[in-house]
Image 1 (tube, rainbow, N blue to C red):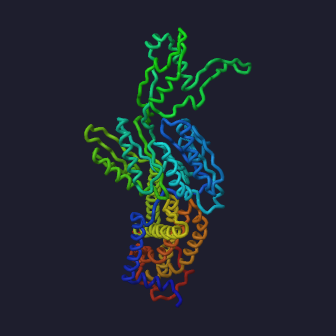
Image 2 (image 1 turned 90 degrees about the vertical axis):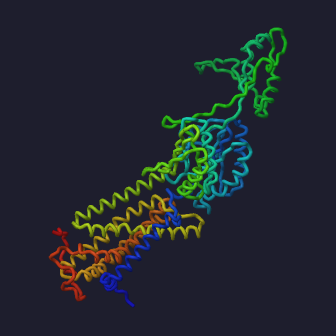
Image 3 (image 1 turned 120 degrees about the vertical axis):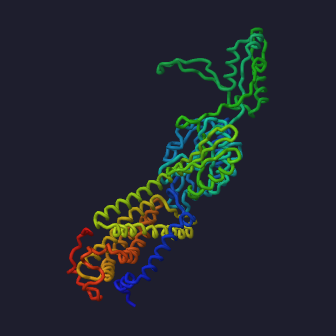
Length: 594
């Protein structure tokens, strides 16, 4: 049976029953597509994972750790990963950051200079020569390395850092805590860290603040020093020599303007304590002896006082407010959904101690929380940042661009047609391409899960593709409306004119869609711009179907398609269904409806 486009469209537009059927079908697919996003059938994300030829591992031990302890953790990581076949080589940087890369620019690698900090750069074989992308390797290696190496020393944190596919940020999820009481901030940060750790899909959770630890101050006792016939300078010099080192002489050089100090220090085994305890410190000071003026050896322990105290943690500020940041990374999931789960878990954990206000508004700070301690009234602001905020900013801006494009397109059509109804038809045709965009991402996601067990996300590039489709969809609707009005001016009955215009213009509309699809196939295979390609491919299919079957229905339901009131739409010379000579159809010039 040969398909007749003209008769098919004519049967649809000339029957109110068929109008309802087509309208219900379009409404069903629109609701079905839109509901895929809140029901998590189609997942949204800023940008998908990017396979690279390298990634980094950041190692942070306790604040009071030694270089030896940090190196021990780093060597454990290297030993754990040495048998991985896709790793070419690894470089370790202890007490400093690695040479700056794209990720390290915003993660503070250049400022690392402490004994408890280290970085490992892992270089992989070329991504085209291995089966696993780098993000799958990180997903597989992370739990193994953490289980084996994070428990060597307390407070050790090991974080895997991948090359970002988009704008680099400090972390995928950053929870900033702002307040006036630094001790209260520290306590709340522990609760936030627990909530993030308990949230499925979040890894590498870390609090960006120093650990509280006990340190010992060695204070010379002036009275005992004088009674022992020693000098304060003697005591100070031996203490510096025993624990750090001291300048004992200088050397002159003809190529150096200043004198060169000669620095003497004990070796590491003698200088460092076996354990960080007061007993070990007292034992070492007892072994250090000074010769007094009477020629007697006096133990240093007898002339000093050991005072235990708490280490002074670094206090961070941002915008003139005290700040503690808690960071987390997402493991093969979008950051949007763990955020919502973690936020609710935080509220549940903090509600016993704080009155919690959920901040509202249209900005990206609408997920923020204001905590008020019930006993003291002290306030803490919980503000989200990192890639999560970048994602919200991007989707907000692209959504605003989409709405602005719709409004401008509508106003332009009103000026052109002098009709709100026809402008609305063009607008509807452009918007309904979203059906194809979302369903296309769903189908591609199922194929991706089947082949590689990795989700295909609706990304920022997908929204760019959707906005780009609006002009193409509007063009198809304009072709149908203008040609239909030209046919009506020539005397063709309204429904027949719509059918003829649709049948005549269907070929160029479909050819345009096919050209877009073929041109977007290469984009669809790109890891970053795949969402743009899928949006253009499936959006073009949906826009074509809407233009050929639903736009004619909308045109049939409005009298605005008639060029003027003086030219009746219902009866004309072509109303009997006879063929119309398209060459005799006059060009259509938009007229005022007055």
